[in-house]
Length: 628
Image 1 (cartoon, one colour):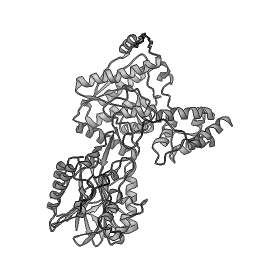
Image 2 (cartoon, rainbow, N blue to C red):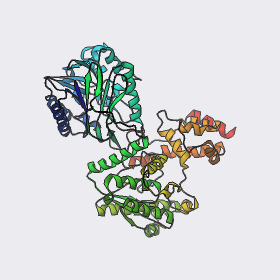
Image 3 (cartoon, rainbow, N blue to C red):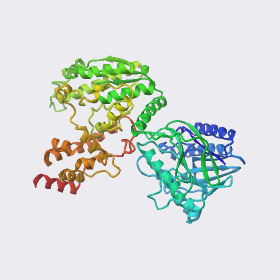
Image 4 (cartoon, helix red, strand yellow):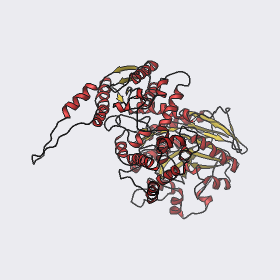
């Protein structure tokens, strides 16, 4: 029996286009003598389409195109592909949800000669960016409602194709270790000879390695071959942009990897299924890549396709000579071409010749466009116009407004973004970028309407240490990122207190605050403030925050910067209040972020504009630490 999976690019919310893509794959497969074609989850509707799932005419179109695709099946050719269907289409009887909406389901449609059947997704993810229970009935609930069936064998039926028994699952059903129902185990015990998982799973750093281990264990422990097929493409939920990387794969009954598709590349992969074992037609060429390489590939693919989807070609970047804008420039040059990139250095009296020189060298290394627009004159104009203003009210009272030195730092940042970059981008038919990293985004270390602005935050899910790692990766063969920027103290260069040539700069101590904020925001089980304080008091905070990694953060660095509990607590609460306070307000107004980690801001890490909260345990420990 010849089996093929096709790793395809799926367009969200465009069933007509996706039907054409799937139909083309089906016709290729039939021409090549394939007996069974496997396509990704939600191949017809796409996956992240918001509440379009609640538009019945859209679902009707998805059902129409699904049925048209199913007509390709004949006595020698079958298909299994993901789509959406109304409850009544699956079970033959109408049903509405609790609020009156027509019930619908995430399904695998199995098309054989003149016959179609459905397999319903059993485990509906409701974490991170996923919220499937908002839209879909799961197999357990639906089956019980339809016919009060509770036996596992009937809730998880097998499908026979070409004399072989297949167990078909959808995405989360394959990640069943922590659930009461374990579809892979149930299907195996029911007599499945091969296990299939059709998926539509977005990229997260490190996920491919854990997925490969997970499915390899399934195959080995159950002594059954496993095929996993994932889709490609860009999808978003408004504030966060996710990239579906493919990385489809297959394992034989020993748990050995026999096929693995490349990230972000469409591909047809063929297998022979003989006497209960799966064999790849082509030799395995897969080589596990480093996480930083996967992140780099994702950002390039993401920028390039986000630009294409948005109908954009050219980008303007404010090149300060700092590491973030330098990395952004290198990424955009690779993704869209140097001819479509313009770097703008915008110095004031606070900018050093060091950073100006880095910006110029960067442009030369990239071969892109470059110019300089000083902002001192316009900032001075703003100060002259504002200082001494005396607004009045209806009672004849007045107040006087004057810009402080701190206010003038923000004036410079806003002038660079809202005035200069916006104007140049408009004149050149381009857009300008947001260059903020995740550390700055977490605490709102960016000026509202200034460097918070931009059309896309390509670095918004990268901690500062990852920014440096990416720069080094980009320089792996030759110097593209000027090496000077990798040793320079990060600085906004908005005042004399941030003079980089004097070793001054940002208030963030990145080796420490990077790991601290990561623990508060990104850890799967996020670190409570009380635990952080307790580890500081116990003298092992660096080990705790490093989370088993070897990093630049040491106990000595923490103790040097925070020699006593009072200074440590003051710093901890400063950044925590910004993280949960003004940082939220800025993130709400910030551009979309490319998701890389498992807690990307926007729709992955969900938050509300509410006050920070300090637990009783933390407050008790704080009082004891300060006054004991």
